[in-house]
Structure formats: structure tokens, C-alpha cells
Image: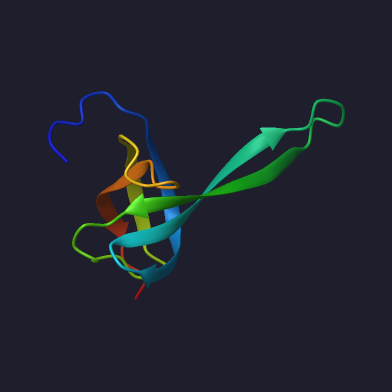
Length: 85
């Protein structure tokens, strides 16, 4: 991947590891409702490049933005923060 510099990073949970060198990571965030001022959980799923196939479903990971690697992959695995089991 080379030098990544100051790129966006996010933390999420691996929900699928069934592809070769790719995992699906769910990133959750809290959004405040404009009228009711209640916090709502919103999530988005990213396809993330995992060069070594080291992630398993349930792992907490940190991902970093990178150049487009395929039609859907724009994120790369930086590190595994917490293993699932």
C-alpha cells in the first residue's frame, strides 16, 4: 500500500470475510434527529482490502481510505484492534 499519509480512518466490525482478500466492515455512527433531538444509530458497510486474509467475522478493525482498488473497494485494513474470539 505504501505511505498512506493523512487519510481518513474509521473503526468498525467485520461482518463478512467470505471473499478473497476482501472483508465487509460495518461502521456505526450516532446522528442527532433534527426535530426530536434523539440520537439514532446509523451504519454503513464498506468493502475493505485485506491483503493477508487475517480478519475474521466479528473482529474490531481500523480501516483507512485508499485509492480505488476495484468497483467497490476504496478502503484498506490498517490494523485489527480486537479479535472476535
